[in-house]
Length: 178
Image 1 (cartoon, one colour):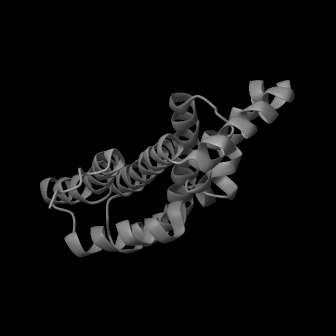
Image 2: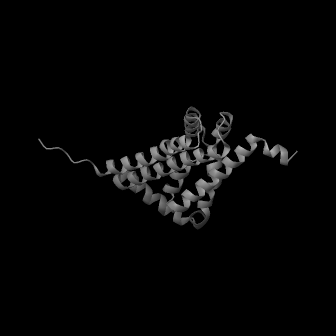
Image 3: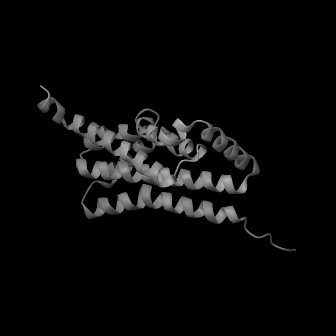
């Protein structure tokens, strides 16, 4: 009896999962140990970031974590999930005829609208603010936008809103705007 070879997408998905786990869990926990941050609070922040995204900033501050560390964890989790989703969609696009056809059709339709193909990628910044970092990779992948620009814009918008939320939580805006 012959053993079937492992499908090629398994290796790609495994790499994506490992990258995600490293960015979402291992790096924040390792930095927590190095900076003497609370491990349970860090795990709670990671979990809440996976659920409520940048809305987890007040939770991290409320758990007594340093604001810069809270921003670091939020960013690390968002980047891990964003990269994982891009890798997942890329794998699906390469190994599924149905998904590949969808990609071709969406790319053709996007090219018909020059405004969207040229300036639409900048919509990822407000998109991450309103719909979150789970939606941005799917949107940019389906519209065939450049992956590197998409990640930079998504993470830029996410970091900005996270900083604003941390500042609001710390009460800095109440001092600046009485």
